Length: 78
Image (cartoon, rainbow, N blue to C red; front, side, top):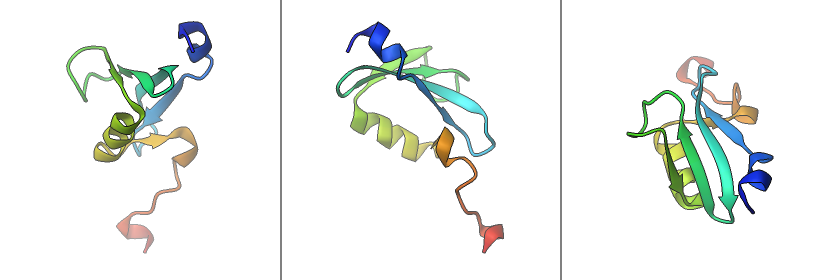
């Protein structure tokens, strides 16, 4: 998959307040270009990550796919 094909599959990760903070552009199997839209997560505008690194990054920073927004529970929902 090249840049042109990957751009069709570009997606974003969001904070729990619906703020778009990271863009993800799949470059090839197991290689993703991750764009730092807010500058909050790493130095520089972008970096490449494997699928495993991306999932770890998503988990550590409590980021969500668009379809996951609003599906998380908090202590006030209990």
